[in-house]
Length: 92
Image 1 (spheres, helix red, strand yellow):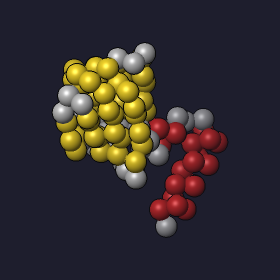
Image 2 (cartoon, one colour):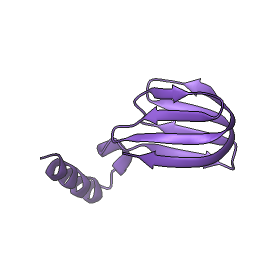
Image 3 (tube, one colour):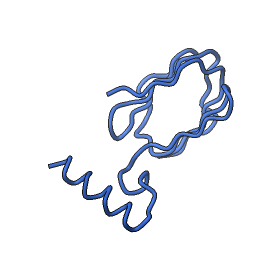
């Protein structure tokens, strides 16, 4: 049932030219160089240390590995992360 709803939402978003991240509740990530990441549509923090950050998403989670990772701004569905990022992975 969720796949049908997602497929219908995708078709509607395409037809109405609405950004899919709004309709499908998808994460939107902006990465600036290797030191700054801005994330929209997150569902909270799972794990946080200077070397590892795991963030809950609507589907799965996002894992950021690096050094001196810091959450510079945290809002209910947005966050800004600074530090030396080595890997950014989407996991189910």
